[in-house]
Length: 296
Image (cartoon, rainbow, N blue to C red; front, side):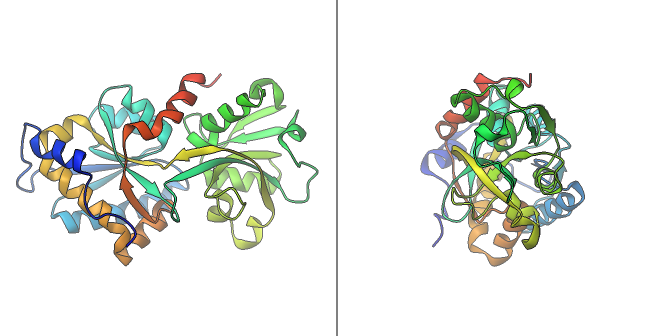
C-alpha cells in the first residue's frame, strides 16, 4: 500500500461542515490548472489525459488550464478561473498571500514527499564546486520557479554568494527541459533545476534528456530539501462545494494505486502518488520567498 486512501481527518471535517452548496448535480465544471514545467505542447496533451481521468471518476466535467507562466496560475486561482491547480511550492506560497489558496495535497516521487534544488554542469568540465562558477554563465528556469530559481538562489545566499554579482551572466531559459538542454549544449556553464535525490541518480536531467545526454551532466550543489509540489484549491470554491472537493481529493489520493492513474501522474510530472499536505509543510519556502520576493 503506497498511501492512505482517505482524506485527512481535519480536511475531511472542514469539507463536511463548511456551509454552502453541496455541489450536487453535474452543472459545475471544474477547471484544473497546470504549471509550465516543460514543453507546452506535450503538457497540453498530458493535462488533457489527467482531466479526462478525473472527469470519468467523478462524473463531472473537468477541463485543463495550462499556464504560460507560473504567475499566470497564481492569478487564475486568485480570480477563481481555476478551482484546483498543480502548483509549485513557491506558486502556492505566493497564491496563499492573495487569500484564495489552500494547499490540499503534495507530490511523492519514489517514497519521499520532498525534492531538492540542484546546480548541474557538464560532466568532464573543470567545474567541481560552486566556487568554480564565479564569473560563469548561470542558467535559471523562471523567476517564479522554486528549485529553478528562488530556493536555489536562497541556498547560495546562505553560502555567502550574491548571484547577481557572482555569476558573469544570469539567463532565464524557461522550462526545465530547456534548462538541461542548454547545459548540455554549452549555452550556459551551469543551471539550476530539481533533483529527486542527493546522489545524482534522478532529476530534471534524467527526466528531460535521453540516456546519452543525461550522462553528460552532473550535479555539483544541492539545496536543503523542498516540500513536494502541490495540489492547491480555491478557498472560495472549496467552501461552496465541499462535496465536489471531497470527491476529487479522494480520486487524486487513489490515483497512485491505479496503474492507469499512476502512469498519468508519472507522465505528467514524474509523480508516483499524492498525500495530504498542510500549510505548515511550506514554511521553508515562505522564508526563501521573503528573502527574494522579486527578481532583481
